[in-house]
Image (cartoon, rainbow, N blue to C red; front, side, top):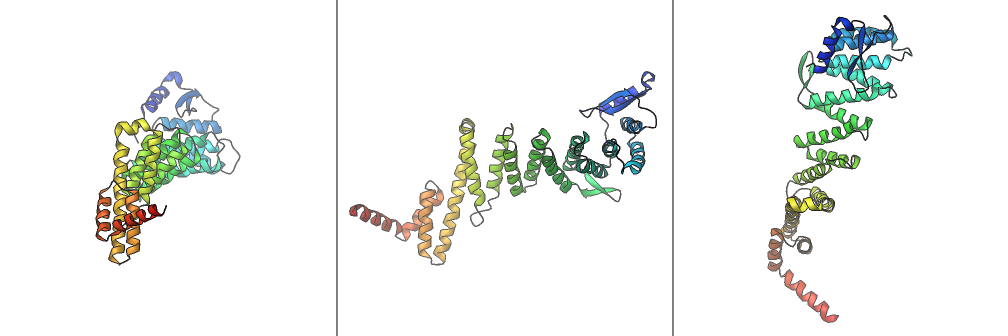
Length: 330
């Protein structure tokens, strides 16, 4: 993996004679910093050596040293065990063995949730998810040919569960929604945008997520003969969008166009249903559907066709006579 400029700077510092008695460690921000060297042979010295190997670009040596230490100490109560697993995971990640690194990070997350390395381990798993989403494939028998996408999706879900309300959880939710959207998994994308909106109501990406959710629900509609529940969801969302962002709705006109398209699609679906009833000679049902179409979607092309059908069967004139009789009786 490509080393960051920060690690190269640390490497240069470590080779300086003036700092020969110093070591490096990760601070609370996940950055390397120099410290005084711990007592040789101590657990702290083992951790410091591992950090130095990683900083020097020798993660394989860090893995070897940490693996030996973990094998001897994994059943003890040493306070360094969480750090050891985290550092070995970090070294494996640096050594281009990101899948093996996940096992170490999972141990930290599962068994040491009160450790300072818990959040760091979740963040590193999020980094690995980003690598897989970007196209990195998993190793199998030494070759990278297995898709890492399912693992990435699972890691992004876990990030949200493990650090709820955090910035990284917000990013993970939006990244996962966008990932589903780009793969045209529209039902999953719509659900994920909805989860994002519920969990992060103050996000600056809220309007973007709502528009994407509307788009997903509309795109799921395959035609009049298919389930139209997504259209209803989209219509309700458009009404919510216009209520929450009235200025933007008027300025862009985007919701007006979508609303008209949804109205026409729903009307066309009702028209097809009425035609099916006519084909099966179920005239009362056809009449009912056509009348409801005219009430709910009067300004559509499908409504014009519905009027033609009702005139053909003398249903409009019958309704008019009926209405007049009712008025006379009153």
